Image 1 (cartoon, one colour):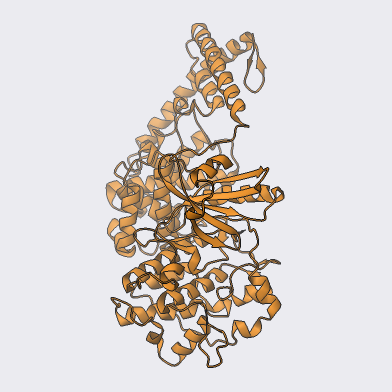
Image 2 (cartoon, rainbow, N blue to C red):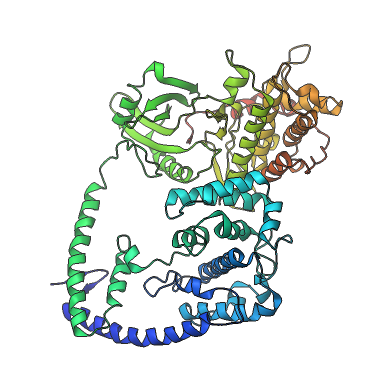
Length: 624
């Protein structure tokens, strides 16, 4: 009888391996027990080194055979873990100077137990002062809570005060921490200054999460320290299972026989699971209630049933791409199903790849993707459909420009503006690589029942590595919202989304469309150009829509107008970044930068060919 893991092994070979590992393990355990005892009882270092030792076992050493960059990440996360535990017990982010060397030596000794000979200073660039220097003079819990605005602190507490052992709970907490880190903590992490980006995670593990940093779920989620035991990993990693069992063969020949029997039982179960898995690979997944997965593929028949055979009564939106239908899943939840027209199977590979990328993006101000469908039908032809959460409150465009909708109050408009800003800032700075939306407009800003703004339609999204300039030969977007450098020259950067955000913000404030007819001869004029002329004449508040119920404080409304005009500036470098915009809108003390003169109007520069190209929206790859 043979057992197949990565290679064939005979019973004799397995027995011999068990005995060898058993005797070796007994020696290793004695050596490491002595090292642990010396390390954990160091009286000079207030860091609780023993707390991280409890999370690390011989059964699962994820970093030992990784590259230097990965090992340095584990080193950094280990420092963050110890810093968080110290903050929780001593109330300080940093260590006093007189214990730095002792704590550094203790931590280095811990690292050497699992990565022998690894030099933290030379390999990672971290020096001893790294564990004592502070970020922006934040030394204590009270300093952090004074620095971060109350709404963000509340968001951290609400999303992180739970068990973080599940993926959904972890993602919610990490999203809120990434937002705070992107907006407020921008220090470099090169080892010569403090670890600014880690401060929100250190704080959250210490105080926002009731379980504390020593909890395995918290350590795995916030510090990526996945030091689970072999038994916890057994259902997911056959190699970890085998190693955990074999390393336990320390009782000699009898123990080896027990292990062989266990391996035989495990191997039968593993082969059965593998056969079952392979037998399901080609089966088309149907609609599963309550499931959010980037790999969830809907069958066309399931979608047909959900939309009542694509009934006209279920159409909730239309566009050049096709129609959007309301659908009801078997569990009763409602979704929006965007059905693209004039598509062919040739583009499915790119489409599915983009679906998988976008499905991994989760934020309160982004419409969540529920699934997709690609199928070629005899009568309907090739189908390409995506399913998203249904926003029953419609789009911002409907509330601003369609009859039958009440005018929005200032407080609601302010909430929508902040939601849009947060969503875009997350796309630009909260994930890597960054996502450029390229089609921000009022109809792509959806509203839930509480008027929380959610950005939709990632069909024009481009994924850009940081620090590069991109040129696009295919310009897409909507006239009036497209930045001049993109419409005229195809120059692609995050600043084109800033321009579109400024135009939508002007629409939100004025109740006027992106392209308006204000001149005497009814020639079209960009809303951005008209708003600039109002501000230049000192009539910023003249932009605010007449008859708006429940107006806000004049100074605040004027600040929003100035931000909108600044964002919609025709020169890219004159616009702020989205994270700067969030700071301006959220903090009364953050002033609006000066607005430079506008050298030209976009409509005056664009000829008919450019306009036609910018309005071409035929069967785009999609999402949301």
